[in-house]
Length: 108
Ligand SMILES: [Cu+2]
Image (cartoon, rainbow, N blue to C red; front, side):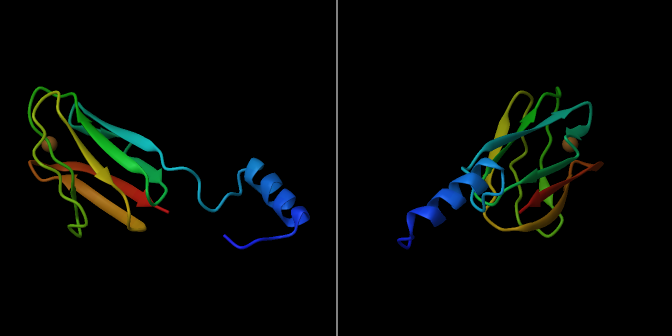
C-alpha cells in the first residue's frame, strides 16, 4: 500500500465505516439444500469468500455450475462441500441428479 497523507487515510477510514470498502474481509456463506431446493436460491458473495453447501436431505445432491466453473462432489445426506469463490461472475448452477434444482451464485 502506498503512503498517503494522514487526511487521506482518515477519509479512507470514514468510507470503510460507511460500507464503501473495496476489499472487505473474506467470509464464509452457506447454501442449505433441503426439500430439493437450494436456499438461498440466489447468493451474492465477494471474490475470495468461501461458500459451503450443506445437504440436509436424506439423499445425495451436488452443485454444478452450468459453465463448469465449479462442480461439487455428490454430497451424501448430512454432508457438505466447500468452494472458494475466486472468479467474479454470475454462475447459474444445478444439481445434476435433480435438474429441476436450480440456483445462482453471484461473485462480485
Ligand atoms: Cu439433487
